[in-house]
Amino acid sequence: MLITFVIAYMAVTIAIGLLAARRVHGAKDYLVAGRSLPLYMNVATVFATWFGAETVLSVSATFSQGGLSAVPGDPFGASLCLVLAALLFARLFYRMNLLTIGDFYKHRYGKGVEVLTSVAIVLSYLGWTSAQLTALGLVIHVLSGGAVDLNTAILMGAGIVVIYTIFGGMWSVAFTDLFQTVIILIGLTTVAWLVGDLAGGPAKVISQAAADGKLILFDTGMDAAGWWAMAGAFFAFAFGSIPQQDVFQRMTSAKNEDTAVRGTVIGALIYFVFAFVPMFIAYSALTTDPAIAKLFESEDAREIQRILPDLVLGQMPIWAQIMFFGALLSAILSTASGALLAPTATFTENVLKPFVPHMSDRQMLLTLRIILVTFTAGALLFALNSKSTMYEMVQNAYNVTLCGAFVPLVAGAYWKRANTQGALLSVVLGIGTWLAATQVAPESMIPANLLGLFASIIGMLIGSLAPTIVAHRGHSIQHVLQHHGYQAGAEAKKGH
Image (cartoon, rainbow, N blue to C red; front, side, top):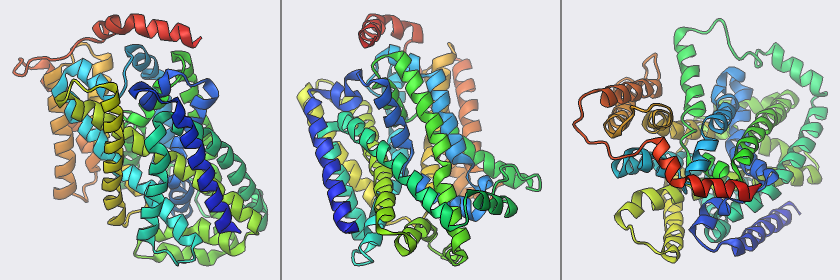
């Protein structure tokens, strides 16, 4: 019965995605849903995209093992990222009338910086997308009772996501996200109530977690290296995930700039609160069956992510299994579709198009779909060869943009003296330092990603203030806003 439900659920999701594809009439519809999403859909896309496999399976398991101090990046850093993006960049991006976040770097610094930062952004999605495909494969593998090996299951899951994303783009993502958000909220709440009851009630689970030291976020006994490690994980999510196409798409798909701000903030708050539900479920499982802790001893870090699926399949009635796996599949599919579309948009618009500038809208749509399939293949290779947990994969992904795209974004938006030379030096020093530190000093007290961030800041300052060697190729924010002001203003009024 459970397998039948999963097949039916997949079929319904694909059907919704394909129906939504009928709204796609051009690249703008495909990438930002025609900038027309109402508040409730905007909130759903923000929540569903961020509430992914790592939140349900990996963050919850990592919390069960190490407590809140082991998960500073998600949900704490991730939620802060969305709030900062909404308050600092949503209105600016909307008024600039951009299709991708890479367009910001093009307008502000020129094509060279556009291509460099866009490549960094696209590469960062390999880890995040791979995490979702790995999770989808894990679900199929578990539900098959091991009949389908994990690698084959990952390939099957990727095929399902590609089918409905490739045709409808952001419209398919928006409609499936709305459907999947409802399933996530209802399904996980029901399972939390049931599992918590088996463990003796919420009060017992929470008191047990407190007694075991799992609810301590800032451990006063932690050494300096521990504090630096926490900071590295936190900033990877809080800052590194701001210059991401999926965050940009959700803000600029809104019907107006007020909706872009409100939808992102509300989505962030719902995400932050609800992210603790999988943690509660996982710790309830550990309280109910301490033998589950044996998964922590496995050499394959991915094994700890089986805590919830194994518990639900082993101890829950069939209706609870349906609710859990429905919610889990919703979380994975909603995030995976967005994680495929975002790098596809950035690569096509900001890496490929500068070299093929005269693409028609029809050619653009075809190219987007080809790149989506190509990127999926790359993410699959990454997923099939990684043994990291999903939480680790996502954190590593954000390190790329933390060191190579965050500083040029902030400086470009808020510092008038930021120029092409500074942006180029910021990207090169930031990513170069991060990569060098990971190879030369992987055990350094200060994490490699923070060293890369510091180097990126220094590069921007030195490059922008030093005598000009590389000519400035971009424009000021005021110039771009004036150029697009009429369109942005017209669309904002239209949205109201």
